[in-house]
Length: 173
Length: 446
Image (cartoon, rainbow over all chains, first blue to last red; front, side, top):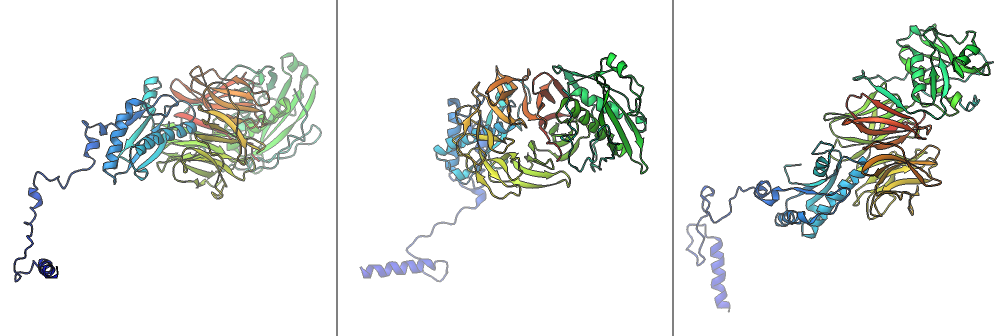
């Protein structure tokens, strides 16, 4: 055993000094020099890619950011499950990404109750995504209550549009 | 309904008024209206006050033009008369343009014949130091007697405050409860993307901005002594509670914990506030001292607890909670403890406000899809829906308990309305330069 060990030890020691021109070539093959970045091989992912490109791609479900609610409700309806799952999976795959979830309400009723209800709507989305693996530290839930309506009409169509949680990615808040 | 309350209506010296009650025998002693020291904003729009309905028993009162009031920028008697008329409790008998000084010899029979049960007569004069003085007396036309009067000294630009003082005195004398004409209201004015927290006289005049912001402002709450205003601002992109001191125009952050900070409510002794925080999850009630120390959690429910409001005796906190599945009003001991449910009709009852005498609860209810102000007699738990509109919010009692001020929407605009506690008299205050919301009626000056 010792006889075999010595040559391999020697080989390791020589390999560590392979940059010195006087050294003999070592048994350990060195890799060819990496290709310059301007001619990156197609098989490798692009070095400058935007990890958030998917959430801004209109063809991707991740560009859909809003969950809508019924009056005085904060439960997530089944039609939004797929959207919530997609965002949760994205956060699991991108653990460095942090999102903001903003809960909103329609204009009717008291400001303070709506502030609390908006918080519930934001927390509902956060909780659903947490159950699917997104980390608590990746998500902050806040409420805008009824103070920042997206639709400014005074009819059911506007109200329905405002009963909403939005998912915001970095750069958007 | 007249009572003789000379002693009871004497008010301690305040920094706006200094006045004394007079009997008919005593010679008029001087009072003075100290400088308010505030600059009024120019009125951007004509404020309109409309009154509908009438008190059950309107007191017929003749309020004469005051002798010498041409010395003032505007008619002092007009302002006082308008105050009394706006209360809905008086039927103002036409007096014509002829001024009647308080020293005049009164033709009681003639006034009685014209339908007046009482007459106010007065005069305005200039003082040696360039200020003004108003003196008036109230006469009982039936008994043909002098019910006394008052003298107020003021600077010319304070003629409205003097007029309100006159109206308060007459109101108290004839109705038997304090008038609110010298009180103030706070509210939020929204114009495009600009929000202003404004403080105005009870008739909407003399508005001044305590805060201008391009982020929302909600929940103004007066301290019990009327010197400070707590409110919630979204200036830092999240709700934070501030306390503003009116005299210095300075403010400080009361509560800025992680999450939302909102719904400030002062304890009646001023020793602490209740606030709503989401720092530990969903909205829950906490108490905090006015200097921001002493945070203590008050509720621990699985849902939303918000909109705390102390009862006037300081014993209870009324609040909104959805712990039972729908938003309802509960109350618990002011130091925390078991809550009991107060509202049982319908599935949306929020914004509890207790009357100054502790006997009535005003709140916002959703009934038939309409958001309206309701009133509950706390002893019998009987509920009466007070308003007939659609999108009411934010009820606030006048400090004499007689009126409930609230925000509503007319023609797509946010306006203020008031309804008397018995539901008979309705007032609308409109013509603001924007949408008005979140009214809060200030307490009496102490």
